[in-house]
Image (cartoon, rainbow, N blue to C red):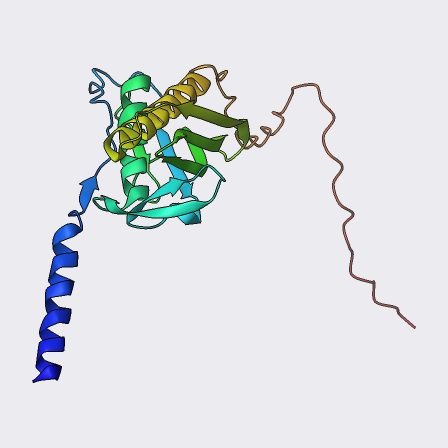
Length: 228
């Protein structure tokens, strides 16, 4: 009887703890609702590979503390893959800012002949209840032949009110600023020089053109028969 009462007490305690724990809240990045491109005026752009820091590859929102340590929020979680959300946000922002629908997210490039490629690495994207949202990234711009046309390291910061919802809003705005900076760098690129075409074979000289004919190879004659 004592064992039964003890088991019931543990069960009630567990249920009480579950009732006190707030339910998980799920969040998605905000893309800012950019307008769709009216016409294809920008280059054919391949976005990616996109590399997101390993510590961000998880379901929970990462919280940075005052001593620069990291913890995982137990209440705030991402509704899906954060890397996929970052890629889609940047894709829509760049399409709107460059006025082009000819844009693809790596590795989805089947049948896509790109004029430019933006290789992007995000090494930091986080915030905390008392820490501002910060983003650190690097991009490299390659032309259609894989030649480097430009690169940049970028660091951005945004304030928020400490709540998880506003932290997500601040991180989303930092990604939108990243897209704006990247689009400006693409527009500032000088036009690339197309690679030289293979040279054509020079036409043969016509008869009577005044040029000396090429010497003929020596004729090998059979040795004559020797008579006795």
